[in-house]
Image 1 (cartoon, helix red, strand yellow):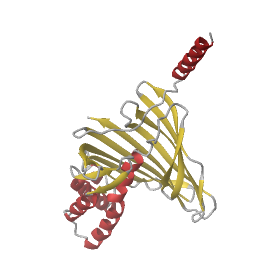
Image 2: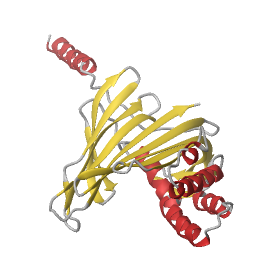
Image 3: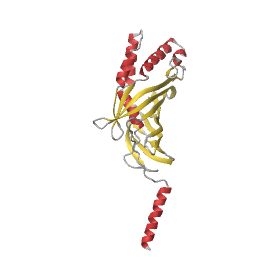
Image 4: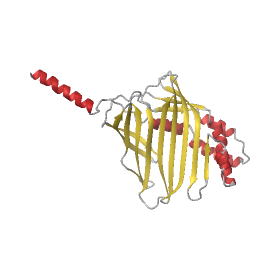
Amino acid sequence: MIKKSAVLLMSLIFFAIISSGQVKRTINPALNPGEQYIFKNTAISDIHEDGVRAINQNYSTSWFLRVIGKTPEGKLMVKATYLKINQKTEQLFTHDITGFNSDDFKEFVIKSTSSELHEQNDRLRKLNEGILGKSFNVYFNADWRVDKVTGVDTLINIALDGMEDEDAAGMKSYGKTVRGTINNEEIAKIFDAAFSYIPEEEVAVGDKWYKDENHQVGPLRAEYAVKSEEGDEMEIAVSSASVINNDIQASYSRKGSITVDIKTGLLVKSSVKDDMKPRAGNITRLVVKTMKNELQKK
């Protein structure tokens, strides 16, 4: 009788775990040589001057990814090719707009309302035309953190060298700005952040884990928590406590959600907002940045 009761009790506990959704999942992506994906990254930045929203920037890039395989050192190699680029920067006070649309190369050039904007938009057009269709390599470690990115610096240099411009001094300054914002290290950060959610152990609804992440103005500890499961998808909430940067007298934090494919462990989509708030009156510029990622298998 005691044995039967024990078996019944264990069965009830197991049933309760299953019915409450507490099934542990292994979220460990596996990419196989030859597989192809589309990865889209969008960065939305609201820039505030003296407490007033002054500039809005939207930069979206789609890459065609092809899994090459493992290197002799055991790194996973993925070739990424620029498929689409869409960017727009609007000065909210003057409504001056610069940008590029890979579906209509000359859209922003034609819409330029001044010679200065025309020059800026035409440079963006030439640069992005030179980048589209070009490839670079991303190398992942076993824990899915990016080991390195190679090839971005080279393709940027080639694109800049191919741009015809009468203003040599202006092009030199422009090239320095471009190389500072689009390079191997900055692209590595995008891919690394997209897969930063991956836990070291199996997880279920309600489970939490922590990772040290990089905010745009300093380090912070991000908390990941499995919020729900529905069908083949798992929703993970990401957040952090407010952290103070005493150098600029600002606090910053992170909050968002990540949707993962339960079967593959791969990212489906994510939206994560980095928020900054002033702590003193000497703050003149703040940036609120939202990063969105999408991954689709081809």
